[in-house]
Amino acid sequence: MKRNGYETKRLIPVFPSSNEFKKDLRSELLKDWPYAAHHIDSAIRTAYSILSSWRQNYIKGLRRRRKPIVKREFVRVKTTLMRIEGTRIRVTIEPYKRYFELDFSEEWFYERIKGWEVGELIIKEKEVYITFKRDIEFKGSIFIGVDSNLKSLDVYHPERGWIRVDLRELHRIAETYDRIIDALKSLEKKAPKSIGRLLKKYYTRRRNRIEDYLNKLAVQLSREFPDAVFVFEDLSKTRMFKERNNDFNRRLSRIAWKKIVQKLSYRAPIKFVDPSYTSSTCPRCGSKLKSQNGWVKCPNCGLKADRQFIGAYNIWMRGSGVTLSGEKANDMLPNESGGG
Image (cartoon, rainbow, N blue to C red):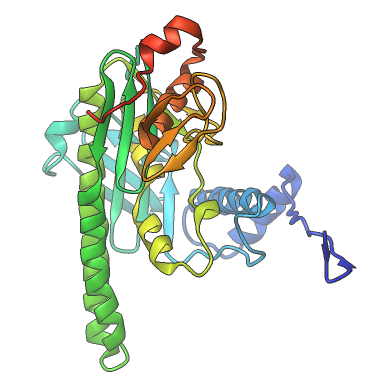
């Protein structure tokens, strides 16, 4: 890489990961450690996971050289390190001395997870998260393409056509709480303690409202399209941010594409495809489409359609391995396409 006539080299971060090093690190951390050893094991695994993720993103140009910092303390406890008896869970804090116990039989979610298997625990300073798992058999007999946009998910179903899923409510929730949070931040210097408590309150509400919306969305999608393989673009919002366009960047940051996919993956099979040129390539002849006011037109074959319909259609084609030509293309691709 050359800048201003000088050649520079990108430094690749390397950290020791041999079993011998990890064993020595574990022994060092266990010195004068009064609690159970599995907490140290959890910390080492989590640290390596965070560093590995940061390193991969740094190499791709998605992170800066500044190393990741864990701001919220937590401990992951594997199922092999706790005793589970029905709805009661017991975790060792100090061997033969102190234990952490909980019973989730009286919790609000109990009826929803009856018969599910307990997964790992995530212990925070004031909260404990219990994960549950169950085996689900995915059939996935139909591929559907999903074009992820700022305020909608545009779905192409080979039998039902183009269906638009409105995400404006998700933006409204995030935007409403962002305005409140911005207003509180402007007052924080005058009363840091009281405003700090309010900020924490509204950050939590924002997160919970968004999580609730996304959970309901995943349920709705899985029920609306049973036996479907959802084909998404392998998107990276980091690459989509624009310099000196804070308004666009903030709107982009409010959309939670990865979380939508993550929550949906618990209920349906997911497949990713290359996002390059999905909205600008003619699915009939492969030419570059010309765009105008949300519509695209092919200068070669004359195909005209909504840009987001074309995106969903091309994603479906890539995910299902379909190639159209001749009469089949004319039957499936009308000259003008409308939303459903």
